Length: 226
Image (cartoon, rainbow, N blue to C red; front, side, top):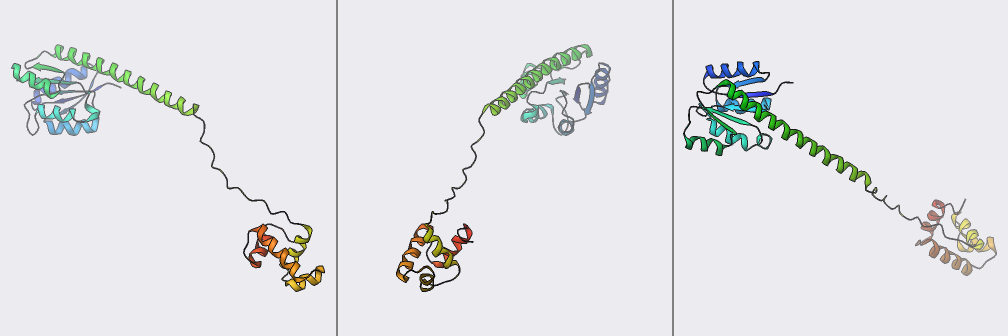
């Protein structure tokens, strides 16, 4: 795919002549008749190089390049000034604005072509090196990520095992689950109500429950009773 060059000049004759020459040299070209239009085309096409006049309506070349250099994506864009302003002061101002090469009018097309080839070759080398370094960085980051141990799994809550009950406690618990009172349990197991109460207290302590209803629910949830 040919490299794209943007030409900004309010002189239609120069725009056409430079456009034809560059297209014959194998480049793609878009043109703008002032700096404001050039800014819009920059956003749309992202050209590889800008050729600009300085004296233009709406936005001149100095302001155009100053705005271009303020945008990170265009800070390294090669810029060539073609202008009738050829004093030392004006050339210095052009370089301070951010141009790479300052060609006074009238100029030779062959010189412009040589300047553009040189700037584009250097720009493409810099871009290739940046992409290579960026790819190396991404590969190193990927390798580092692979070498890092996976994050530890969250600890699952520890489930307390069901309490160990004696045979008599199990008998009392079974009868409690059936809804029997201490007296009725004592009659079934041939125990005094006071002894039954001691077993109930022991069951409440082992299951960490507060009353008989909680005790029965605990026993059902932990399959301590049928």
